[in-house]
Amino acid sequence: MTSLVSFERVFEVLDLEPMVKDKADAQELAAGPTSVEFDHVEFRYPSGPEVSLASLEMVAHPDSRTISESTLHDVTFAAQPGEMIALVGPSGAGKSTITTLVSRLYDATTGTVRISGVDVKDATQESLHRIVGVVTQDAHMYHDTIRANLMYAKTDATEEQIWQACASAQIADMIRELPDGLDTVVGDRGHRLSGGEKQRIAIARLLLKAPDVVVLDEATAHLDSENEAAVQAALAIALQGRTSIVVAHRLSTIRQANQILVLDEGRIVQRGTHDELLAQGGLYAELYGLQFNESNATD
Image (cartoon, rainbow, N blue to C red; front, side):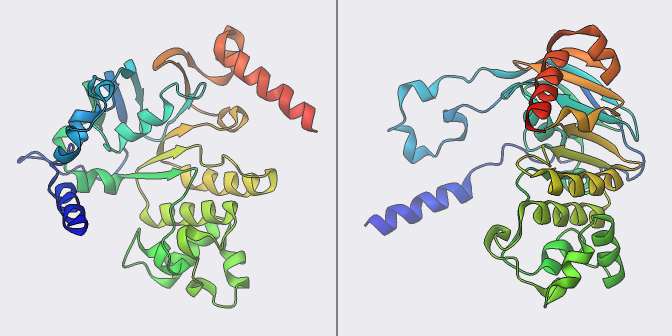
């Protein structure tokens, strides 16, 4: 009986209606120079009743039935083709939430997210995911070979294209030193690789995909200084000529951003270039000063 109940819940999950789906007349997004725009975007994560299984509703805690509070409030900005927009702010400010809306893991509660002038709700998810590439701080690796993990981004990639992407991602020399080279099995979640190696393979995968928009969500977090330097060098190549939305782990890495958005409690409280924001004072200057002092203390 227990097994039967478990299977019933598995099928409940499989039968759940997707919260994000294509419209019947959804259009294909064209490849090429791409802009990203947020137009008065508000967002709240779905509440329990909106995503719960029917079989669990009867035992849900009463407090879980309440509507969640908004995570983003009136967020408006635009990244023109080839520009870098950096997102900074304290933990929980809404930075990662913005990145999930770019790739449409969720839909904005109100307001509009546009890619090259097209509302992402009017575009096919396939074309959106083809245009947008994402690297997070915990790059996912399948329990397979390095080659298979790379070709997930481009199934028809040639050997030359794979090695070119690896070279650009500063990981080719390491792979060549392995006994099995590209056919080395990385282990479950890539546990046989260091954090820096996983990140550089993720960047090589991004380069193979060749998206028009790159989203980086603290891609160098939790790396030591040597690995971070190698990953930053790889990212510099990956971002060339591409529109990018970057959640910064260290503020020194986004000094060249075209625009820096400072978030606090889901709102943009400052915006400008690095020099402009330092001159303004406020939260950005405070965060930068804290990191600068911490860096000096460890030298």
